[in-house]
Length: 565
Image (cartoon, rainbow, N blue to C red):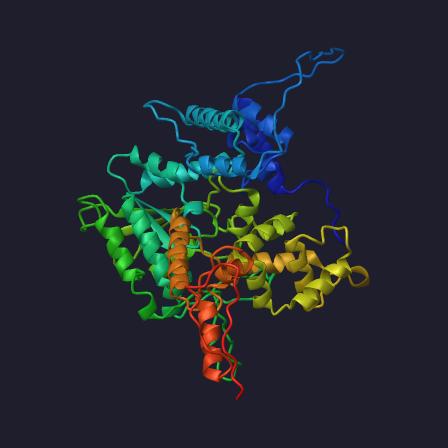
């Protein structure tokens, strides 16, 4: 007979006791400290409902509200237009270009004063965080910009502040497929206020880029005086024979390091590499390995730090968006697995410090942060891997963005889908249900090709969208962005090439317009190249004799002498 439970668990009792103690001390528990609800205090929060946002703002401002009953307030202000949806394409492009020039701020930690208690510091951080969120709201209102989802948990920003304060060199890790998206310019401004601290960019996953594209990005960053190093954590893990095992979608062990068994007679496990570019050494000569990266980090340490037994160890902080490979870079530098790796964004949830053997350096791994932006939409957050696909509800909007970037033909070619299968798919889906949308057509064709159907043969677009998004995020469906301004250069180069090709082309129809104009005109006729070639061919065949027409008067026929043979 099982024992009947008579009360709550010990853990709940401890939590409730701490709550009562915090309330008795007048402290700020739960969302009063983090800016989010207590149930979400330990995880990343990118969006909140209007009610949660209001409650969090009220508690950060230490404001109490009381409900009133029996009172009504009449709003007499005139209606105002708060948005305009019928803007033309030129206006939208101008707004996007202007938005790219805006440096969206991040919250800066308030100055600490001597004698300030921990509670006073927490209150000051909450007020600074609330003021920052108000500034973003004003930026949206006055500039007409739309702010993307960003990190709303104050604890995650606190860990970024701690990482910056204790580090001598701060390394901002970017995904080389779209470096400008992952780069936070205001973070660089925040680091500059600390005297003696250095900052550099580490462009991870450099194997995805071609050598020409890496040269373009290197020149773009060098022209702006930005220190950057290309790196491929996967290549280093491959050299160390510690490549992460690629498992099926939805597995809980996805991205974890593969374990090889040395037992005799046991079947050999086949390890598949994750999606990657060229890992050959000759194709990545401009990509740093672990030895060169450590040298780059060592030479950026302040004088007298990390130089011997009498000096303190240098601290290297790694920051950046989720899923850019911070933990993979640290594991590659250590040569053994020290921190957990996963393709799920936000795997690292707490600040971690690790002492690197045989060096005088300590590595500091900061949890991934989604910085605010006005350039990207939420769909761009999804396709860049900063939002877990398991938490996604709208799949079609991100797929539209993928189709625009990669192109429908490239996507269909990758999955071996024919246009006949695409037509069959969206006919199965039904006309009148956005079947004319190219993204829907691609998804219907992919689901039809792989025989994934819902009721009565309707293609499963959700499955197809998850497949496309997962492949795009992991790099199996590859797309790499060009540096800003390169599109215009490529268009100019393409125009020059097309002009040269047009001048060099010797086609029989190059003077077709002249020939038609000659036939239609009633004035003086000139011998064209086409007419000259036709007459010469007839002469060679013996059918006619070429006659000069320069002396003939307008309106008279030009006849040659017929040959009887």
